[in-house]
Image (cartoon, rainbow, N blue to C red; front, top):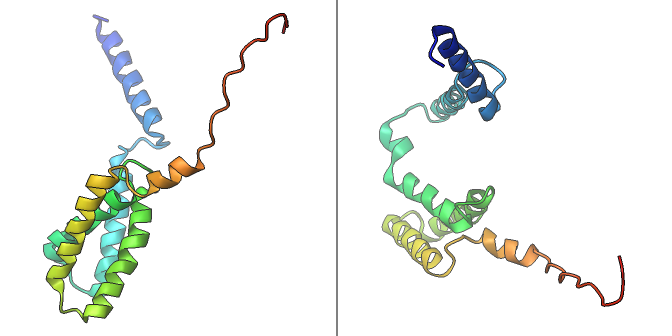
Amino acid sequence: MNSRSGADQTTEVDRQYSFVETGSSHPLPPSTDDVAFTALAGSLYLCIYGFVDPESGFGILISVKMLVMAALGGAGQLFGPLVGALILVPLEELSNSYLGGQGAGVTFLVYGAIIVVIARFLPSGLLSLLGHRSRKPEPAASKPVAGHAD
């Protein structure tokens, strides 16, 4: 559309579709919901620990732990990281109680070993094992019988 009013209409239609595609019912950008939840989580963290610094929220161990959780459960699946967390967090707590907090480097070794094993033998994560078992075999395509009309 070459006219000014045509360009305005196109812009309005594009704006409406951008909010429809994201499922947002209010005229705010979709990222504001994410920002609000992140601010709430940061506020709760501050209330619990009383101090916030970059290392406490973005340390290398926390980043690697999230990566391992996603890879362990299945990064491309909806509940994959949750399954990874349900396995990895108790494993970490058991190793911390068994070693008494003295083996900080052992945690990195365990995470590295998990990444290597998952990448080598099960790149889709543990949740993909359940997906293969729960699938029912598809019935064979029925072939028309000769001389039988449907």
